[in-house]
Image 1 (cartoon, rainbow, N blue to C red):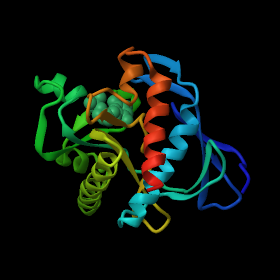
Image 2 (tube, rainbow, N blue to C red):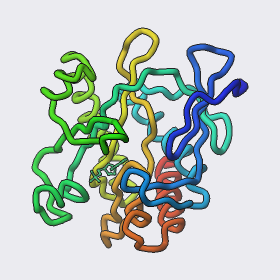
Image 3 (cartoon, rainbow, N blue to C red):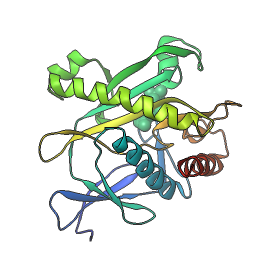
Length: 239
Ligand code: TMP
């Protein structure tokens, strides 16, 4: 499968058309941004790790009844995926208070929720991805009522599967961000990536952050944290 032309460049990935109109190739970069692109940097080797980890986790989700865009990994940084039209919602699932939730609602980081919290933002860089609720999303026609229900149900199932998987790696899944798309039949499937860029992952024993917060917050040891979480995921997957 060959890359024909670049159709999109995001902050962390490039997307290419292929000779199959239903398939795209995504190419993961080492570029890292935070705060809507205000902070820029490079995390050496991140693209390779995120490509592998996202594919491994999407494979696990497929086995657990969540349809995804994954077709097959092509190389260290490249994956063949189903072409989708992205639903312009960032779907965030939280098990423990952290990040913007802690800031917005004045809750200390680390406070566990009894039930997962699902949050939507409008995926719109010009507006700074504002938080919105289901009624806003329907008013803006970002998705249909059925699509929103499907997305919420998948998000909760993904949370259950990933929490269990990461627990087996000695890691607590604090929160994560998902993006969904519509395939050529209009079906909702999981798209984008699931990686240390898009999840908060804390060592279950020490609380050490093994995710992109090390970059966002200048905590140091960024590459080491990505390598560590990758090692644990690969080892656990093999068991
Ligand atoms: P937040 O607490 O900053 O809202 O982040 C919630 C989760 O979403 C966290 O796991 C990081 C992830 N995330 C992204 O993947 N992309 C983003 O642009 C932002 C702001 C957060």
